[in-house]
Image (cartoon, rainbow, N blue to C red; front, top):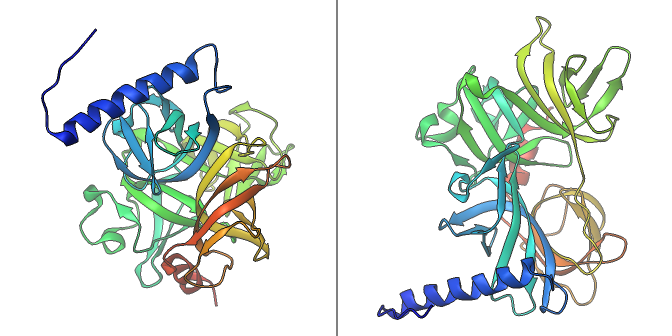
Length: 333
């Protein structure tokens, strides 16, 4: 079908982009797949920084999401449900020219959802379900929580926090939303002190009782778990209704990777982890650093995965350092 559109140039570019995107989507989903299309598979993790309904921006990169499968906290969703500050995991494809990146799957999992236990405005932190949450100048607050950020938070407020964990396992909040009691409680984190006899494990300072829960996957210490609950025991233990083992992110050889987060492990300035993803720096890496690479420094990295699942960085850029300052301020002692 032929369509004639008389619009300003900006509108014409949007129509052209949509047409190109549709062609790309047909190439990706058609029988030829990625092979022969000049495109590479892509995985990205970072906060949403903008949305148009058919595209979202994650970090500094924009992705076409019109044909993507989107899930929010385990449920089917649409792009409009993704808000600025939501940390998402995105899979899709990219071209060498980086003209149009296309998402096939976008997943948002809140890091913790429940009642605020305590607030420490002086140290820009608060507790939810035993998880310490650190607030920075970049944290986006739901307007329903007030206009002055952490100063408006009170014990008992029901919130959901989108965040990444730092080297100590604390949450650096990217977005904080108001929630209702009907939403239930949820926590995502690494399991410790797994006790099959008592059917309990810990995520941070929180003890979880999973004896009545539906468990998906092999539950073991060190696994990342998604825990849903609707009740607490009298002892303060979270009674899980569902526990799911979350597969760790592992890039395939030749796959592109883009990650916005914090350095969670540092063997050397040329080998470190960002949100648990191993990153290697070599002579071809472009460095844009505002200070030395160190634990809990916020960074944006991009590159290509090797056969060992290590991201060989094309670019490493450090972000604002207030997240690291907040971590130091909230540290005990």
